[in-house]
Length: 469
Image (cartoon, rainbow, N blue to C red):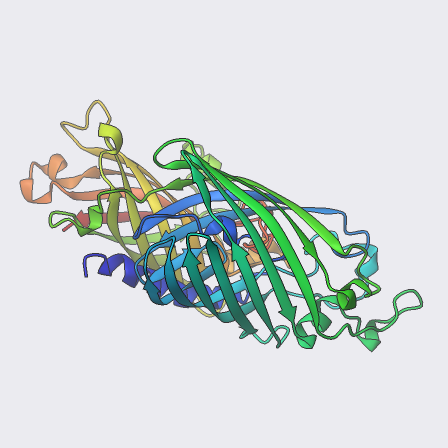
């Protein structure tokens, strides 16, 4: 029960993010799980990124670059591993021995390139990312971990399934961890035909119709991490995937062996002390109301106080609530806290389209060490995480002007506030704050396939009141 609130947060996040994954077009294979499964302590959270370079399997596809944000949580029952979220049905023993059974949803990072598709795919219908649901069984022993998984498309994209068998071994020495990994995947005909097949209506003189049928692909990789400090960790890896003969013989495929390189870093918020489980740990409640910023009033201008203009035409509004629990208080003795938040925001699109809600899950750094804070406590915050919208907000649809949009985007929440208790001399309101913030959704300049390769987003200027109970 001591971690019940974080687990409820992740349960809500899992449900809504699962729906959003189905709509976020991403295009790579799913070999990032060995890097995403890196948090050691129960009830720990992490935030980071992995930059990935991989050879495209498609003719003239070249090398593809991708930025994969790492939003990580490892609870007693729930987990979030970048593009995978799920429930631990049972988890017996420790990390190096025992058994574990997971039920999960996973975005399949596979498909045609979103931007600049090669000539070999001209005239073909897009092959989009799929949303899979699966079961994963792990048998962990000191000599390594055996894994068996089965996934099936629940987003009605390719309508097939895949069985994966794998082995990995964790070698640790001081700050170093190495993980060799081998996975053999049995892909059914519907899965292979969707991503590597050519329909009769797509056939040309140089691209005959082709249905590869079922096949086997094999991936081998070496992944590593280096602990720079108690919380900062560098990540790296190399892998090679060998496509089965049936996929290799497709007229749109040019490579059978697909190498990939991964480089990244992660900050682990989990610690030896579980702040949210302490009896005196506060719970933050925040009410917010805001209006869309002018399209030219982007985030950089707002946070540097060069623009605070709200939309003058087709204005849309938001209102919402955020609930937070501290993960770290007074980091290394500094006036710096890290708080995990879950927020639910309602979009009032004023009849321009149907209204919708948005779920935000993020970690926020809050600094309060200003010279005047002993008289009027002032806090400067920056939240970073994921935002999953029931439908793409109108301001994003209109600003993209027919370009790619995504319900799942990166979320930033810069804020500044002051204590009402200090302003009015009320001890009862000491931990109640009034402030100003920006609700920002973006696709990280189109660099991330997980976020739909969206180059754009939205900014809402809002005011709020937050109290700690």
